[in-house]
Length: 442
Image 1: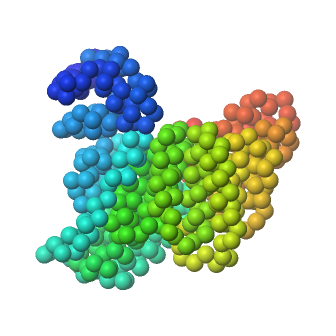
Image 2 (image 1 turned 45 degrees about the horizontal axis):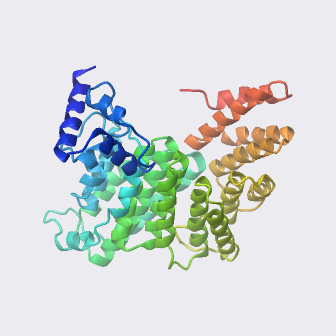
Image 3 (image 1 turned 30 degrees about the vertical axis):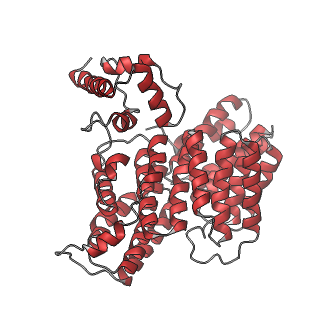
């Protein structure tokens, strides 16, 4: 038991006692705050933390928020990143602090459902007006349409590269662009109308940073970028960007298995998008809700939302325009729908959708195509068609070469684990060897 561990425990005990809470009460409140319910922890967990026998690394964000601890402790997010303290800063100061901490990359941050749900209350809708009225006297630049368009163009170029090769490529360029170039514009002078466009464009850039961080495997940093993207979008008054940021956190909650948080974030995402006219946007967010509902074993909601998404994607225009959800093509929808149907147990329909996704236009990014091939191989195997699974996985391995994405890496590891059971099948050993060379363990 180290002195630092003991100090953390004493701080928790003192704060709990000051609130008049028992060990069971704190355990109950922490479970609720984290999102998995009041029975996930017991009093013995609290006792072990307070006596220094264990350090609650994962639970510290919730402990700090519930007990209102004054100082950061033991590998916790930097003060500007925590949802309770971020509210003390305006959006610009907070997101730039986040970017600077990402440049330094001093720690891995744990994603939690409590932080994600806390993001729903983040926006300060008057922040933009105050910042416009109180422009810094020493501002370096006056911001106009050119600066806003520059951010959008850079986001598109860097986003295209990430979509092709994975979030592990060029993430540092996104973060440095935010903290070095965009920072000056955010701290410059601008009209309220230009400010709204500037905040919206920055929200897109920050969302890209979040997606790249998540695709690289840093889910905690990713979540915090998504929360800041949501905050900026809401303050800019952009419903689609707000919904997209919430979708990012919802998908993350789905991937991490936080069912209740996934459903709530997905529902809020759909709510934000309810007045949007873009059919692709409707399909984008309704499919996310269907995915969360399927994870939560709510077949009725999953089926209803998936049907709504299908109707929307089928009536979408061939030219979707410049909408943030414009990239959500019929091919991408077919992929997501296929995986939802697989989770619901309809493997025949799942295979049809995944094969359809590969056969139609829209899967123009190598990373996306690789993931669809990996998923289709799994569905083939579940249906007992080992030959089709091996052939599809062979295409996956060829497609995935050079891509730096945690999803692709996870797909390789999952495929390898399944190949272990197929050693007696011709071609399985060779495929496993290729997969090992493609994604060697760190």
